[in-house]
Image 1 (cartoon, rainbow, N blue to C red):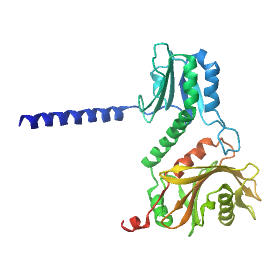
Image 2 (cartoon, one colour; image 1 turned 135 degrees about the vertical axis):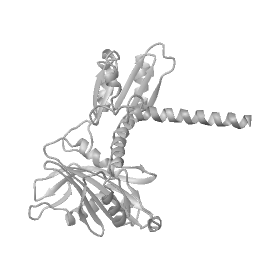
Image 3 (cartoon, rainbow, N blue to C red; image 1 turned 90 degrees about the vertical axis):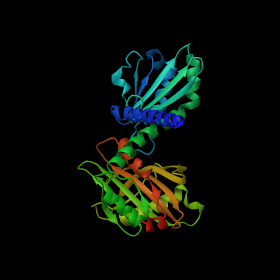
Image 4 (cartoon, rainbow, N blue to C red; image 1 turned 180 degrees about the vertical axis):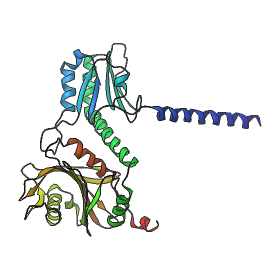
Length: 336
């Protein structure tokens, strides 16, 4: 009986600990700052040196696939003295700690430390030389963490405010799951091409879903994917101008890369689209995966038309939708 009592007390204590942690997370304020903004807490003498120059070069690298030059991120530097409660709730923080008292250099990555959803990267080193070495060894990891945090915030927001009717229709008609936020509507729904759009007076954000039979591995090359893209868009996408159709701008050749998304091989294209026989254009990003259940290649693409505005954040909003792609097993779908 005594042992049982101790066990119950221990269980309650663990439960209380978990509850406190959850309560603490729930009570955190929402993050501040604009999309793509990164606050770097670094002494002014360091920021103005080669160290700061390296940070700026990394974070302000040009975003690929846009018609105008836009940086990947927008860094803002403040001193440790200025790092008050106001800045502690920022969405993205990089804190540079350089002191002889630090025995071991390293990087700490924390989420939701002072706000949510927040990313805090703390870099520790005993001296400037060690800090620079730490940065050079981890710069791509740091950049990847920041870009993923930006995308994950969008995905989380979309999951909180989904356009459920549209999502269910895509799953039923295309055999795909995509997390699409409220405001989007169907523009076209055919056997193997779907067009979904969010329209405002000044901006158009569109999603294309199309698929075709898989033949062999040569499918997943830039040239083949562009060829299929042009084929579908010429057939289905036009403007009000007579004889117009959407196609790929090849004077600036799209950027191609392959990676794993949700455990599946994925081919990505980033580039520019244009409307033949009309004066329209903008950026697009597409991902293509093999659907093993139906022996087809599935492409999901986002494009932006916003002639008066910068386009980085708009294309990232679409990218967050694309990265939610899941191919539905028809056997599982039949059980619902």
